Structure formats: C-alpha cells, structure tokens
Length: 425
Ligand code: SF4
Ligand code: SF4
Ligand code: SF4
Image (cartoon, rainbow, N blue to C red; front, side, top):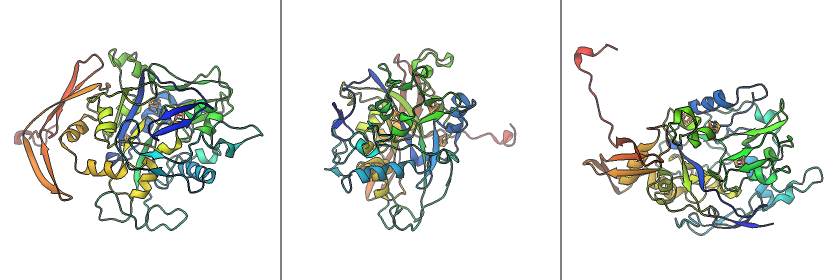
C-alpha cells in the first residue's frame, strides 16, 4: 500500500492511493465556545438538500450534545473502541505540540483507520479501512441526549471526572454542542473504501463527492467513514453525503455575485460561530503559508482551531476552537494534544486574535484575506496572572478578487435610541 504524508499526525501513513492534493482545499472553523445548539445550521442543510423521500434520516450537518449525544448514536465511542482493540494501549501521541506547519501537534504513534483494516474483514472480503456499519436504530433520534450534562461518571464511560478542566469554572457538570458535517478529508476513508471508485475528491477545491451514477449502494463508504457522514438512501439504493454546497463555493450560485460564497450551514449560523473558506495546499497536503487568510491564521498562527479526532487519520478539514469548561483529557482525545495551548490562547486572546474573531459571519462570501487597522486601547485587566489589553481595532475583509467586503470593529458601536422613540418600532 502506498504511503502519504499526514501533517496532523506528523508522519507518513498508509493509504490505498498515491499522494495527491487539490489546488485549494475546502476547510472550516467552528468556535464551540459560542455555539448555542439552536440547530439553525442543521435545518438550513435539511431544507436545502435532504427533504426528499428516502432522506428522512439524513442530517448532513447535525449538532450533538457531548459527551452523550451522537448521530449516529455513540459513533465516536464506537470507532475509538475499535481502534483501541486494534492497538491496545498504543493510541498515543509522542512529543509536545511544536506549532511547526509539518507536525504542529507532535507525532501520533498509534494506528489510523487505514492501518488496522484487518480487524474488520466483512463477508470474507478484506476491507481497506477499519469501521462499522451503524444499525437503522442508530440513525434514529439524531438529537438524543440533548443538553444532558456529565457529572461524576464512573468507568468505563469516565469522561474526565476529577480531571483538570480547560478553563476556570465554578461548576463540575458540563456539556457542549458539537456541530458536525463532512470534513472533506484530505485522505477520505469513504473514497478509500469504495470498490466502484464512485467517490472522488475534486482537484479544484478538495470537495468529496459521490457519483450517483456509479454508486451501487454497497455502503462501504458508510462503514468506512469514521465520522459517519456518508449515508445510505433506501429509495435510490445509493449512498449520499454533504456536497459542500458546491455551487456556492464555485461562485456559480445566483446569489454569489460570481465570487465564492460560504455554504448554507455556515451562512445560517445564528451564533456566528462558523467560518468556512478555501486554503492553498502543497502536494503533500500541508498548507502553503498564507498569513492573512483567516483560516490559516486560526489553525497555524494563533493555533486555537484544532482538527476533530486527527488520530483517525483522514486529515479532516474541519477545525474547532475547543470549549473552555471541559476536562482537558476528554478534549485531548477529541482534538489532539494542542488543546491546552489552544484554550489558553483563546481565554486570553492577543490583539490580532481578538480582531480575527470578529470576522465570523459578517458576510456570506468567503474571506480570502484580512487586514487590521490599529485603534485605541479601551480596556485592560489581569487574567490568569497575565495582562490582557483590548484595543478597538478595525478589521477589513477581502474577497477572492481582493475587493473589500466589509470592515468591522472589536468594540461594537452602541446606538442609543432617542427618548422620543422609546417604544416605537
Ligand atoms: S468525513 Fe467521512 S464522508 Fe466526509 S470526506 Fe471524510 S471520510 Fe468521507
Ligand atoms: S456544506 Fe452544504 S451540503 Fe454540507 S452540511 Fe453544510 S449545508 Fe449541508
Ligand atoms: S446555527 Fe450556529 S449556533 Fe446554532 S447550532 Fe448551528 S453552529 Fe451552533
């Protein structure tokens, strides 16, 4: 089997196909700290793409309450257990996160889903990828365990009781909302497992699609995707998945004005927690330095946004700013060893990070570059023994054509309604 370079693992990895990379890669950042679990993103996708017969159980984007929620049920606990069985005690990271673009989180010493396929031979056929096929029941009740907090759980489902939490918190109970969609992975497990080569990754933007004419509904992709984001449709006997709203990404949607536009689930976000974009990548899938692209900044400069379960090995292109109030060990399992530093930087953001965080959801178009214009200091305090200063800087966003899209400030302007209009509309 060929080997490819997986920068999220800091090492070479087995993968069924030769190393290849798109010109640009679809990617997104979700700030968990601000997600309110309103499911507007979920419904935006549902009402656009999966409202037809046979798609009733399909939620290409969903928001689940961690640690108990999951769609399909317990998807992540199940795949973690399979990996642990394949490599007992070996699923570990070596070294400290360095932040270097080729191995920012250290080196993963365990096995990925591509390195332990022998554990899931099905029907006498060897599989390319470790995985499992959820039952029909597991696809039901997508929002089960909504808002159920964790407290004092004992083993085997010990979610970090008594562990150090990532930030200061007065409460020992915790939960958080994890918004998910297909990660349009750099090394897609769905694609690797398809015996008909019906799944492909577009060379122009890295979006992963299933060719409906080629698919015969073997469900190998459903079984292989560790994030369970490929789904089977009984009425057409094919599998379907998130298409990254590609007419919007291409700028061919009538609303886009000819420039790339963010997807439906991103644009609809009430909490303003989602930002999606396109990043430039090298042949080995490491990111080309693009210092003032907001995604590059959040992932590789500020290093506050981390990949979801990087140890699965698919090199997912969805990144998350981890929550501040959750036990570190639980978060490290989900986002890798960069959690502690990411939470610390987010809790006491520097001047540039505070400005970049204002870019979320000010426009539906994709931001390709930003600039910061310095403003006056408006606040200062001590946080965690460190000085925190807030400046009312202005941040300016530019589109693909390098045209200014909007400018916004760190401090929101306050408009006081004149007394004469106090109760008018
Ligand atoms: S998240 Fe799953 S369905 Fe999406 S590209 Fe990755 S492996 Fe394929
Ligand atoms: S990117 Fe588009 S297709 Fe994919 S989950 Fe979001 S709304 Fe649905
Ligand atoms: S729309 Fe935004 S805030 Fe609401 S659930 Fe989705 S990601 Fe969270």
